Length: 329
Picture (tube, rainbow, N blue to C red):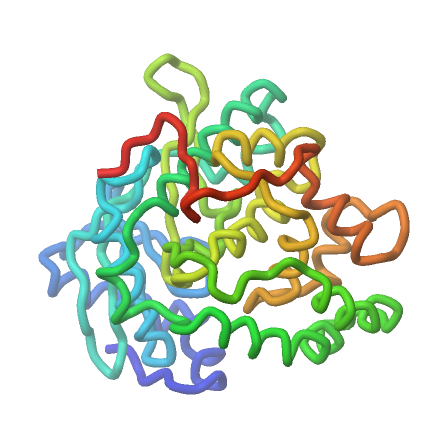
């Protein structure tokens, strides 16, 4: 029912077209024993994703992104029940037709934290940030070994080298002014990056848009879900703090410090901005439009403005996150 999608041109023609996508989604649901269950496509996200009734979510992966479907299935299955915040439970997954793959998973309760954030009082924001820090610490404490066969990038030092080699061109292509671009090589030369960092399971897009919030058992707001693991990787845990600083705490005073206290470790702001420049989806001009401007137009000032926690960076003992109060099964 769904046509082949192996190129960007095919993606642009097929994936946004609900007249093409919906019959395929309905056919797949029929095959999965869900004939007649209402389908409601979500408007956000790169992949086509449907709510299937009230309790399930169907995520589709065209051939061009079929490997992402395998990653999503494997990571979700590996994480099930291991984090203090719920993650989707895989009900079914596999190949469909013409290179497409799918994951049928449980639907998590709650509202998009990004959409809810403006109406959340400061005290509740602080509690949610604490819960998020504990959740990320628990994720980073999970053994990534069983996922070695599906998660990249392999050698972390080689990955950093490749990203660094393309950093200037990547930001220039995004439209970064030359006054910023010319600072990148020296800034990366001086940044405290670790090519042989301990191997950690990374979400890579740990952000409000991938967190859900709703009433907890005590009636207060709490995190009710963490989802979207298709971009997961294995690498330096500092890499996950790009999403934290840019999309969770967003330079709101005191929040990154609260997050890192809950996580159990802080980081050099220059290290986190360096990872921001090296991230596979890095777009510094966009971040400069979205976040508060630094007091002066330098990368050092930007690192402090977006990633300073107000705390000294402690020495590490064993290379693992010190997640206080969290037991990882």
